[in-house]
Image (cartoon, rainbow, N blue to C red; front, side, top):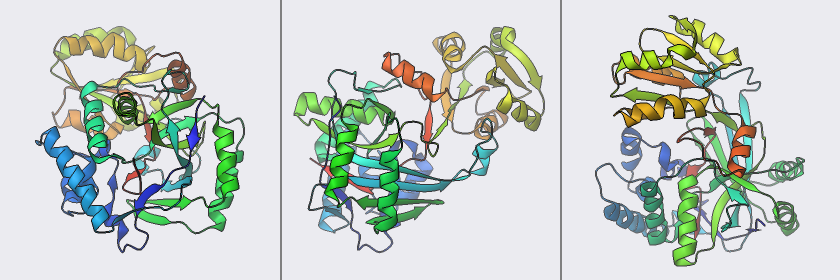
Length: 394
């Protein structure tokens, strides 16, 4: 049975000026260029959550520990005096480049995602809290060593609860309209806000409502795997999560497109030939069909044309096409938009890219609760929390 509890959050000091200069994007979205731009500020949280390229794990965790101690000493971070639950809100606009790629009519472009930030008891059984993506030991170990050294959860793991109605969300919306936020940060076109719920009746209602729910991790699989290790080895039996309602339309489910190098392109063409349903030389013509054609779960771009592949969803594509290519020496990388992936091919930085549709959330839930892991980077959920807004010290 899922157990949710209140805690004393560590947050940015609400009295800070220019508080946006102390936060950063979530660690696993940061590339080298982004790192350098944020790392120019010695007091930015990025020094505690992202390893600089070329540094060792030991160097990273030592720097993280000293950074956290400095941020407390300089009163950039402070711990709230009383245990509570917290509301995290992200107001954002769907970018043009995603709007043009999304299947069907995305409806509103301006969205607001609300979530409850709470402590959640680690599930030993694997039945109450499930993941849906494969995790890698090296990534898990890095997060474990980081959290153990600093005695911190740095950002909430995003997880979905399956509530039958929308009462919790209605309560949260009413609360934030009547109470001032503790923190509000505008960053890259998004507005991230945090409230401490000071009404204990609301906290108790939310805890009762979530008790017994099953949770599915949406973002933060390595952090949860590291949290399980912390419980087993170090006795830290709870971790910080942001819980959102199942099927919330303000949460976008998007794919990662697969870029391939180190392959024989003639062999690739021969392998996919039996799945090719139609071919397009023009990007605009391709994207219009790809967005609306039900059987178009994936496509191949090899620099000359866009080939829609029929009968190859992301799971079959990975197992039947991509995995054999990797076994033969191919290498895979991932890009967040179709245009990014296409550009990589056009620049000669990869040989071909597989363009994919995201699996349906119902399919993900079914596979997760059956214990069937999805291929690496099968999903990309937006929006994402920011690092440095809410943390937890243990």
